[in-house]
Image 1 (tube, helix red, strand yellow):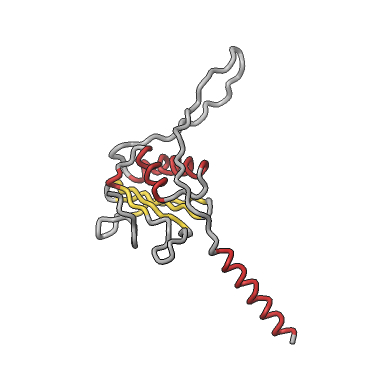
Image 2 (spheres, one colour; image 1 turned 135 degrees about the vertical axis):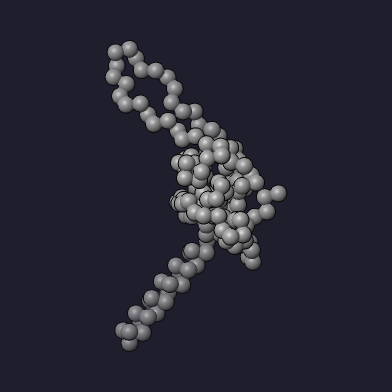
Length: 163
């Protein structure tokens, strides 16, 4: 009898977990405004300490590897003001940061069948023979550099038409 009770408890926990996982929040279209970098001066005689690291910058025509720090910087800035960005917000953010829209790919922020929010959004910027690939998932950000696929694209699967 105890074994049946344990299995019923496990089944109930799995069912509740699955139903909670299906309750993903709606995506947000908020895009951050540019943030000013270091300004101001130290008072005379005060030890200013080490200079802050400058914000990364876009290197137009640069490789994916050369632009990865900037790619990460602008995507993490978006995530800091919008923990659940829509695919439109991702595209607007990358274009505002100087990446060419023609080089972008992004997956939909809703499932195709039920139009429910997707668990994650993947996006990529083609840079020569490589791709900057990013992912927003549950308020987390991940990125990598990968090769352009044989079809000339960076992502596999369904992407949003950006035209």
